[in-house]
Image (cartoon, rainbow, N blue to C red):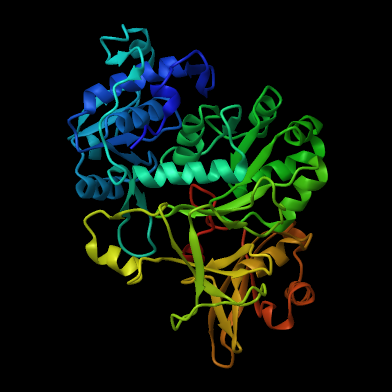
Length: 492
């Protein structure tokens, strides 16, 4: 297989590759630093990486990939029980971390290797295993594992999705096609580096193209303004980040100008509410595009850079990805009518190989003919655009004989000026089967909209059978690190 990062191995140069705050590496320096890491872990089967938003994390992962070793990114916010499970399951002997990082007790049995970026860059390149044509690259195949990323399931401990090198290469190349992504692009983001979004798309993506990435460390609108005003061309974020941008825009003309000058604004990891789409578009003249992926599949669909950036959709399947909708009885949902709901199943070179040590779960995740069951439910518009309406387990509500996706009701609620946040679930109902329940964080707790007002608001925008029958008011919705609403954590 060809190198994942041609710019590192073909002709290391003075072009910028990574920047975290005031610290940065050119491609030549990254080749040296990552090559040094690779030479130290080359004999390992897997290595754990303490996934802080730092230069060291990026260098550690690239170094492991150059050495042909699978990296296991660890969330620094994980508790000892979860870390213990991940380490016991993936069995790394080594953990890579920044020199100043204090590691929890669960990691103290591992051999620690400090990623000393500056020292490794300054050291003699030949001593560190870097020759005239870049760092030494292990001989590996397409199916060899690149990452083991742990997914937080709704039941049981996290499962380790084994992501092969083939999946990373094909996903990033498909996104390059969809987004017209080149080595001239400079990406800015503030995403965590222990998830697919921030690590694979946000770090490995620019490096595969030969471009550069500027990581904010901690997301803030000031950093977005600064970077997009000084040469950055792309912004990646999650809905929480874009919501903060939308809130700030009315009083921040510099932010509006910076966003207006960006080539591409991309949101992912959860649905971006339509009202945030519209507020950003109105203030900047630029539309955010959305894409759809999972840990197990990397990226499946996207709105294309040369396509219509339509709020509420995740675009069309990426090159090489097959996508179908399937009814509960296993039959295909053929309609492109924007209403017929089915579970998304995908097939293609972007898929993971297996759940580590879980052959039962791996078998259950796939159909007999190789389609991966995503658990997400969607509809397709007449032009093929996919609109995700929720998770099969929590967001598909069967009420009065209708199949209703929670996502479209949430978007409708968010268009009401009295609603700051909204989540929709179903609960048992003797007459309807399930009734629609809206969980609402009011914009003004002292003047919250009446239940009937919100129900009528939804009915006018969607259909009467999609109106919430119950409204429950909260101070905030429970969310995970990526900004996704955790519906199973809502009060019972």
